[in-house]
Structure formats: C-alpha cells, structure tokens
Length: 265
Ligand SMILES: Nc1ncnc2c1ncn2[C@@H]1O[C@H](COP(=O)(O)OP(=O)(O)O)[C@@H](O)[C@H]1O
Ligand SMILES: [Mg+2]
Image 1 (cartoon, rainbow, N blue to C red):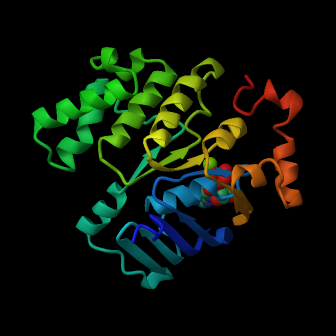
Image 2: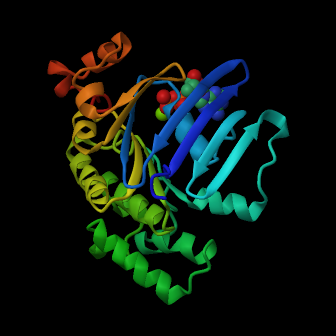
C-alpha cells in the first residue's frame, strides 16, 4: 500500500494569459523522499510548488497528495468545497524565500497561529507544540522575539517551524535560502537536513547544487515549463544526459562557487 506515491502529479498544465508556464508536468514523490527542483529562473519551479499548494489553480492535469486528489479541467474544474480545500492546502507546508512572518507576533505566536485558528488546537497544546518546534529549529531562546529582532536565518527557521506546526504531509521550500546572507545559509540548510533525516517528504526549489546532491533522493531539472530530466543526483547532477542540464549546471562550477546566485551584493 505504501508503494503509492505520496505526491502524484500528472499532466499538469498552467498558463498566465498566452504564457504557458507548465506544460504537461509529471512528477511522483514517494513518502519520505526529498526532491530537489532545479532550473533557470522563469522555468516554472515556483508555479509548480504554488499549484501543489493550490495558491495557483492549474488548467489541466491532476494533483494527488496522499488520499486527496483534484482533477483540473479548465473552467469546468470543480474545486472542492472550502473545507476540503483547506484540508488539501494544509497537507502541504510552504516555506518561501521571504519569510512572510506576521510582524506583530512573536516567534512563538507566529508558530501557534495556524494551529489556533485553522486546526482549533487548544491554546495550551498549541503553545507546547510550538515551543517544541522552536526547540527543534534551535530557537527556543528566541520564542518571545518579534521578527524584526531576528536575523534572516532565524526568521526562516521560525517560518519552517510555523509550517511544521500544521503537521503537513509534505514540505515545499521555494528558494528558502536565496534571500539570506551567505553566512546564514548553513543554519537553514541544517534544519532542512534534519527534517530529511527524520523522513519528512520534501520538494526543495534550490540553487544550492551541492546541498541538493547531498540531501536529495531525486533531482528534477526544469526548463521552460517542462521536466527536462529527472533522476538520482548521481545522474542528473554528476552525469546529466541533456545538454540543457549540462549548460545550467555549468554555471555553478568552479569560480561560481564563490559567486553563487543570491550571494552577489
Ligand atoms: N502570477 C503570475 N502572473 C503572470 N505570470 C506569472 C505569474 N507567476 C509566474 N508567472 C510567469 O511564469 C513563468 C514562470 O515563473 P516561475 O514559476 O516564477 O519560475 P521560476 O520559479 O522557475 O523562476 C515566468 O515567465 C513568470 O513571469
Ligand atoms: Mg521561483
């Protein structure tokens, strides 16, 4: 029974006006797998994550997360009712490049907010589990701090704890370290690595190719809205079969080590 993929994306299509951004995307993710999604800017990586979380509604295809499945048929798509939709969304936790923490709430309150308002978790229980999660990301001593008193790396770790508080089946990271100063990248990657070790199913959009090689079970290279190739890091990163993949990865080699994207400033 566990052979069924936790995430199954089939024939996914999404456009913005005339711009076809996702063209027939197929992707399967097994429970406990980490998928690194790489590719040039504009290739549709963020749109794909946003579709999985239903922040964007695709025109065609099917998305299955666990037992829940939605078929998209353009305007005819019968989106499930509010409650089902909320449940579908809650099954994926999203972490963005820009943390999007609530500025008027402490780290602890940020992590408690979803469970309190969406899951209707009793306050004492929400607080206990929020403290546990802050501990897990190494920030228990910052529980009472407001976001503007936290570093970028700390904010992002609070954002991860906040997403985990909803007990998602899958975590989606969209360039979670791209906005960070280089010296703060490591602490966030460390938390992601811990989650991988614990068996959390994750899709990471990342430009940290070395990290992707280390942590991913599957690497997916996208360009212009299509999956160009997909497989274990030892193949896609070390021995890519497609010229487009080689060209993209070539940018990360040698001198690019110091001038990794996002590090330029
Ligand atoms: N909300 C939107 N409205 C219109 N076009 C969009 C929107 N979001 C993304 N796009 C377009 O979709 C394409 C893919 O974008 P995106 O998914 O952000 O790529 P990536 O994350 O790989 O850089 C780009 O051409 C972008 O301009
Ligand atoms: Mg993006």
